[in-house]
Structure formats: C-alpha cells, structure tokens
Length: 280
Ligand SMILES: Cc1cc2nc3c(=O)[nH]c(=O)nc-3n(C[C@H](O)[C@H](O)[C@H](O)COP(=O)(O)O)c2cc1C
Image: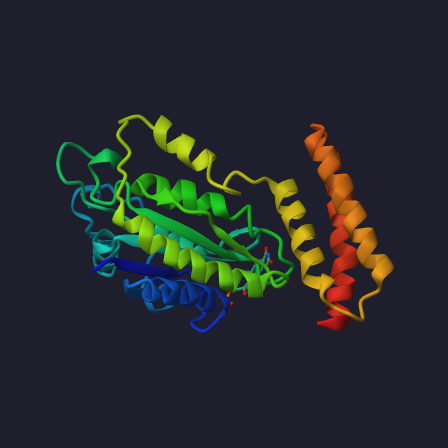
C-alpha cells in the first residue's frame, strides 16, 4: 500500500498548518493510501550543531539528538511526502527549518550524492500558511523546495500557498493535491544526472517556488480580491478599484517593469484588507 507522510511544521497542533496537512492526508487516504502524520511540535528537535562527526550523512543518526533518526526513517519509508509550514517573517518558521537541517537519508551505496538516495524521484508537495497579514506564502516556498525537496531528490507537485483570504480554497486544494500525490507516488522518476542541472530545472519549473516579494504581493492582492468578491455588503467601487490596481500591476510585470508593480499590489491589498476586516 502507498504510504504518505504528512509533516506539520507548526508547534501548534490543531492550528492552521495542521488543518491543511490533515486535509491533504485525508485526500491521500481517500485515494487509498496509508497515512502517517508527524507533528514537529511533538518532536524534541535540537538545532543541528554542524558537529565534526559527519557520520550522519552515511547512517542518518545524529550523535547529539536521538530523535532525528526515527524521523529520517519515516521519511525514507514513505512513498510520498507532504510538508506544511507556517510562515514567520516571510519564511518558514524556525522549527521547520531546524527539522530540515537534520534530515539525513542514508544513501544506498555508490556515494553520498542525491542520486543514490532511496528517496530520489519520489513525490512531495509543500503547503505554506501565511496566517497573519498573508505575506510570505510564496517567498517561504524556496526553503522547502531548495532546502528539503532538492537534497532528497523529491519531485514536487504544485504547492498549496495559503493565506487567511484563500484559506477555504487552500483546504480544498490540499485535499486534491493529497489525492494527486498518491497517483504520483506510484511512478517514481529518479533524477539521473549526477550534477544539479536536472533538479534545478525541475524546481525552476515548479509553480511559485522562485517567487520574490513582488510576486508574493501580487499573489496576495489576487487572493484578497477573490476573498472579498463574494461579500454582498462590500463597497463595489472599492472592489472594482482593487481589480484595476491588480491589472495595472500585471501590465507592468508583463512589460518588464516589475519594480513598479508593488505600488499597485500594495494599494490593492490595503483596500482589500479594510473590506475584509470590516466584513469577515
Ligand atoms: C513570529 C511570527 C511571525 C509571523 N510572521 C508572519 C508573516 O510574515 N506573514 C504572515 O502572514 N503571518 C505571519 N505570522 C502568523 C502565522 O503565519 C499564523 O499565525 C499561522 O496561522 C501559524 O500557523 P499555525 O496556525 O499552524 O500555528 C507570524 C507568526 C509568528 C508567531
């Protein structure tokens, strides 16, 4: 049976990261997978000390932290991975990063290179939740893809970036992506090249992974626009203004004038936020 592991990077079990990852796991279960949930808040994760022993790269065992190896084993044994992290200061939170810093998958032989890892070519997807202002749902994706998925050799499905404004849709997307993951997990497609090129190409082509703060702000403006559209009592003129600002930002970005776009996305966000706070 296909095994899917969902990792909750938030210290708050029952919070929004939990809800999204659990929804994704429910989707995976409905597609016939055996599911496993790992709550990082319940793990005794110590930061990697960068010690000189270095044997962890070969056997997955941390000499300073007994809790690391069982986590590494669960990752290795899974056929597909869901990684969810809350956004703190526009990036993944420290707990999720401390976890990533200790991921070691022992290679099958042939050397320490990623292509020798038993995880090479397995599938994964990321969920981020920027649950405050909504900023950082995209900028935080890089840490997960470049820091966790690429070194493990995972192939990424489209991520699920969540904010308070698209949260309902994100739950639905997470569930759908959980189902897709079960299908993808059956077809392990290992990266063949020893060099990084193949993997870099893959993550460059994965939606949203290489977003800068302007892309993030554009995504947020669109999310808030869609989030308030269904509020009947919302000031229609203000809603229309948001649309105009978003269109202007898009034109500028398409014309290679990206540095000018935030003036419009930030304005769209401010107006949208006032409507959201008044009615939701
Ligand atoms: C230290 C800290 C920094 C935060 N920074 C951001 C941020 O940059 N953008 C944002 O939208 N929310 C931010 N938040 C809010 C969290 O993303 C939000 O509370 C989220 O729901 C946490 O996930 P959880 O419910 O799974 O714990 C921050 C929260 C904390 C505690």
